[in-house]
Image (cartoon, rainbow, N blue to C red; front, top):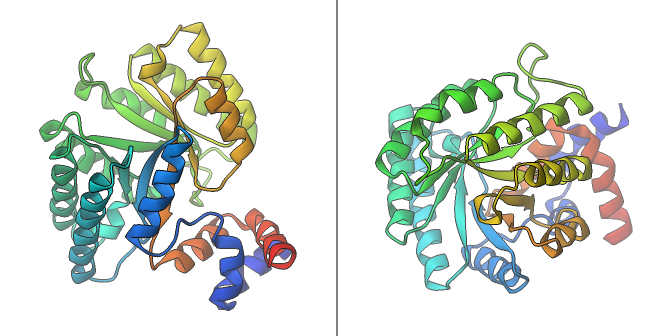
Length: 303
């Protein structure tokens, strides 16, 4: 109850106070902040995926502006020789307002990345968006087979079948590239697994399916048992190191991240930035109230 109370009042706290927690997990507010953070990670041997914070916009003018910002992000990151790619949320481009407009904007962003022989990851949001986001991925994948990937969430009961349903887009030459995470949105028990062990089990089952099919799994987790379980699967199938990677969030579990990197695995860090960091952080806490005490500790013991 305390965590829920804190998560409800967090949006009304002064932004400078909340920043004491957020600054460790957000690269900054500007494109230059994100580029510099990405380059610093590159120096440590870590790849990146840059993401502009924001989602659930109110009008299509915002969608147009967001597309233009992404085009600028790609231009600046490529000129700076950042070793990494890009992630985006379809609702940031108006998915829930006009799906076709969102598709056209996302396609343009992927086309821009493809002009640099680079790659864009389409994030997965809550279940009202799932089918639409898979459809947009499918359409763009057919046109830009090497330049687009998708996020899937292991806590959704549909995910294992979704992987199988997308196999027609897969080939040995251009494998499907899926980032698998656990999932953070609050979903009903009819749609999502709720228990920790159950979610982990399905995470590893999904990874094993991707490995068996020769896909490229991006294993996105900070959970040591899941990482160790993934190690066992990679060893079991003698899976080549160039055919998978691990992913983590900016600022989260750096010691664990280093251990994965030191073990010889590819590591990519999700680098979020933007003017909408406050809304992003407060929404994440409302979706996952257990984060609340971490925030309070950060504010009062670090700030």
